[in-house]
Length: 596
Image 1 (spheres, rainbow, N blue to C red):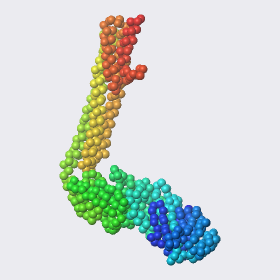
Image 2 (image 1 turned 135 degrees about the vertical axis):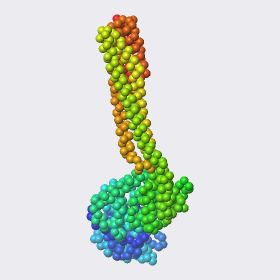
Image 3 (image 1 turned 180 degrees about the horizontal axis):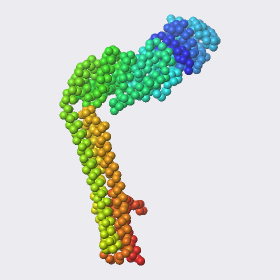
Image 4 (image 1 turned 45 degrees about the vertical axis):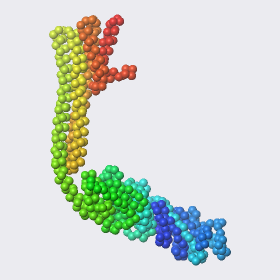
């Protein structure tokens, strides 16, 4: 886009008389008379109107009489063309009617040939302040201007907020007359950095805080795209920093306004950000900010008129104080000390700028006393943290060792069963006796010992959970008393997680081994039971013993179904433990022998 069009717009905005406009964040509106503008400036006005039609929402010149009769529209902008409305006529006098007929005929020629000096002269031939005057109404649409500036800069509209204003004075007045929270929502969104472009070109050098850019329209081409991107990244990073400091209801960052010029320009917004951060409660009203600060002794509250101006020195003192406040004031133990210092020296929060030195000195005294008074608690927290690490280590070590021993006992029991069977086979040469021994041994192991082993595993799991909870508790205690500077919490957490990780690995290992042993013993029990029943009469001693032990599988398969080592199978929608298999084999074998 040609930058000359924006410079033409700058000339247009500088033409109307002072205080003839109303401006907000969407548009600029002008209302003035041609006699106030002058014939020479009227020519320039018409030229600029014809050159900047894309930015203009409405433009009309109306002939207005002092007797309050309805005005007559004699010139207007329609689309991109200046024209004289057809059908209107002047009824006040024959002289005016004749002039308007002549003007209507001549105007199309003047406009088509861009003879704006003749058009201006023709307009001033009817201007007579004693009985009639020509009123000008002009509205400029800011959104189109801002889009064109964004194109000129090559910025991303989703990441940068171009804010066009005629000059700093009108921006300051709009901020003063608008609710401050509406100003913040309009200009200072967390993810879009603002760039304030002043269109009149009479505002002096550009100002930058590293977060906010203010620049005149004739200077925007002097700033590189990389400068805008760095500014945007710094702005977004500042909002993120404030969000991290204030977990709930983060205020507007005061660091946006690092320069005195910016604090003066955006004074209500700056005060809103500072007092929102300091106060316990802040309420926004039209042109007013109410706030409350409380301590254990008393509470102070007041309101501040945002339309009143503070001098630059007062604003700088308040900025410096808030910077110091942010270093510790957002953390609850220190925030309460700040509030005690404020209510001790201020009758209302707005007197803070007058008592900055006294408040900071008193706060330092309170902080020193608090540290001395809490030294014993700090030392206790540090000692508790060290003792806790030792306790976690011992508890986890003991429980892990106990769990490992239980698994080892199961393995020893299995080897014992194997050795017993080998002994019976070698001594008695009786497979039946070996099978009956295996059946009884397997049933006893599953019925009595596996639940005990599982309880040891569960105990270790519980110790792990308690260790994690205790670690969080001690970490919170250390932070709450300010001992995190004396205790390396990262190292503390790393060691605690290492011990718990080892214990959890042992739990997983134990549960896996229990499950494998359970399936192996169940299979051995089932096969030995089936063999005894097949090779012996139903009423023999061996068969009766096997049938009796099979009843124990009801307990193993049903009562222990929720044990982690128990494997379940789905039969017609019902979950049954594999511990019931020996009983099922007994029932099937007994029925088979009875039938056949």
